[in-house]
Length: 214
Ligand SMILES: Nc1ncnc2c1ncn2[C@@H]1O[C@H](COP(=O)(O)OP(=O)(O)OP(=O)(O)O)[C@@H](O)[C@H]1O
Image (cartoon, rainbow, N blue to C red; front, side, top):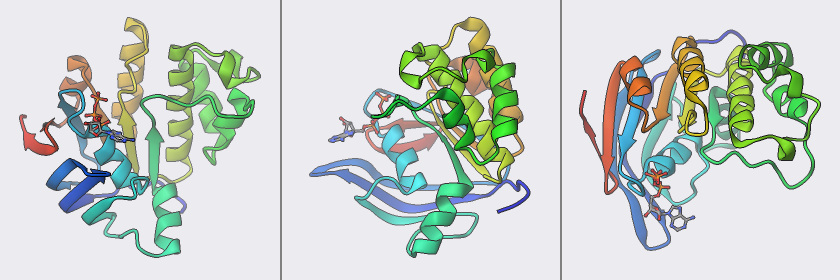
């Protein structure tokens, strides 16, 4: 994967289960390359599960999910999907072993660009620190900087799960600016109206189903 090119998403009849619970109940969705979509909705309505399904991280998934026209069946497709989609998790894990913040940035595939983004987001000086020693907001900023690196390394989609939830007011604006100006397709789960307003469309999820609200 070389230069960044925004990728389209196509979902047909997507169903995701957690054991017996059907958390996503048959979602059809088209997102054009380069579109920015806010995904809102009540707690527990299936937003995180749906994002994880697009990433290929949710095993109990049925239906069809295409990213850039490609599926997720073969090992080559799965490996491509991991690089094509940058991901900002809702509850960033500090990890089981002591990973340094700089190592997280480097794992993006574009360490220099991720480090620059970390500077811009005010956490550049923390790159020598173990992730486990960072505050929630600092960790969230670090993951955002890593995602910028992933895009520089060629990801064409950014999936972000409440990326501003732990940030102060200034951080929320900076993060929204960074997220919505990246040259990729963006799907952001958010309860932040200002973030949603910056997006091209807002979708609302309720009990596993999706509807367009703007
Ligand atoms: N690992 C799991 N095992 C069992 N059920 C789960 C698991 N993860 C999520 N669920 C259930 O699946 C449903 C959807 O959860 P999900 O995390 O996708 O919701 P969400 O819309 O992202 O919620 P929130 O806004 O609170 O983050 C919920 O009923 C939740 O309890």
